[in-house]
Image 1 (cartoon, rainbow, N blue to C red):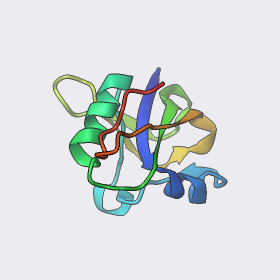
Image 2: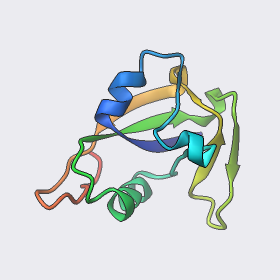
Image 3: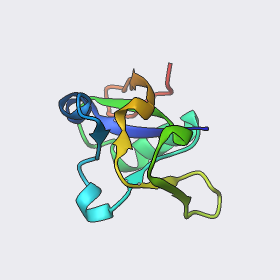
Image 4: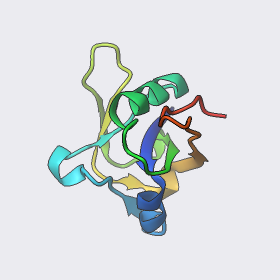
Length: 109
């Protein structure tokens, strides 16, 4: 099964060479936020990161390749939480996210 994780391009670039990846807010959140579905990850980006001017990428993560526990804690089962770092070997694809001039995230190409 695949899920998606949005991350600032510079953060991913600085950490992708490691065996594991943890996002900026991992210490506070104690899990990695993910989103199932390409449309839902773009909706999430626009809800939380539209005003963040950094360039972003979306990681496509193979959930079955993770050693950390994955829990769906939302009723709709769209937003899995990974309770541990993401093994970089579980990242199947990294895609740039296009944005409009006003910061709106555009659908994935």
